Amino acid sequence: MTADTDATGTGATAPEHAGPAAGSTRCGFVALIGAPNVGKSTLVNALVGSKVTIVSRKVQTTRALIRGIVVEQGSQIILVDTPGIFAPKRRLDRAMVSTAWSGAHDADLVCVLLDARAGIDAEADAILAKLEAVARPKMLVINKIDLVPRDKLLALTKAANERLAFVHTFMISALSGDGVDDLRSALAQAVPEGPFHYPEDQMSDAPLRHLAAEITREKIYRNLHQELPYQSTVETDSWTERKDGSVRIEQTIYVERESQRKIVLGKGGATIKVIGAEARKEIAEIVGQPVHLFLFVKVRDSWGDDPERYREMGLEFPQD
Image (cartoon, rainbow, N blue to C red; front, top):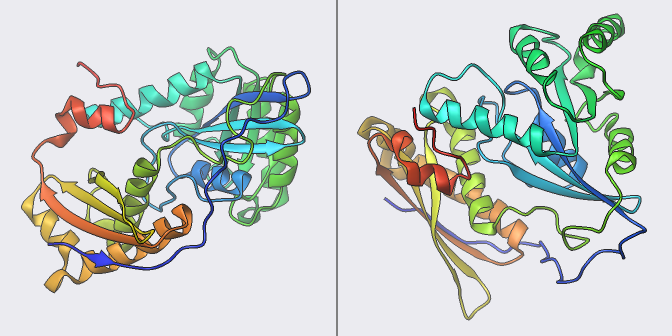
């Protein structure tokens, strides 16, 4: 079953040029660490000012280290949106958690996100304990501050700073943008001196094929909610530039069981058509071209145990 949808977009491609000269600039990697659904992906998109990573109400949606790139006050801030850290149960879980911690150890700076509503719960407590071994400067970012009273925020700030030596604490709402400008400015001052790693107006280093697959995966979650486990994955099989200036994209949605395939397709193909239309529209806005998107749904038994799938998602395959 396929879904083919067309539309024009209004995005713009980044020109090929380097950033400002070395010596006058700063550039560094900032890892965002936190429990699932604490708002890391939403914060990346808010800091960048454009969508570069998947945002979903389902937990554990970010799988690989997708970088959002921000230029602020002569600094290039490369944001590493790590998978949410949780207690791993399956092989994919272990790969995601391992990727998150490697991102923290490799970064120049670590932003630790806490959900203002949840406070220091069991997940946050475990993360703070393990962060003691990460020898990088750390900033505390308390997100969703619009949802709790001020006295709770102050108590949470005090408790977290007693646990770890944070160089700064920020209270923000990534969704509304409250406090995000102050955080962006502080990150610009905190990254080390050095030349830009990417062109000045590039917003992500994720290949368009990968980003397109992530967009489709987000639309699956948005439309199916609890009906489909998050183990589903999307791969961009082909990306063909056409003579008329449009692009033809073929993607395959992989699920683990036939019953899940039927859920994605929907009655008479209705669900897959909605997913395709929403994904096509957003992909077109990003690439700045009309998009013809064809979606296929296939069953791939135990894809979560296939090393090749992990490499495609940018994850290391756990051997045990």
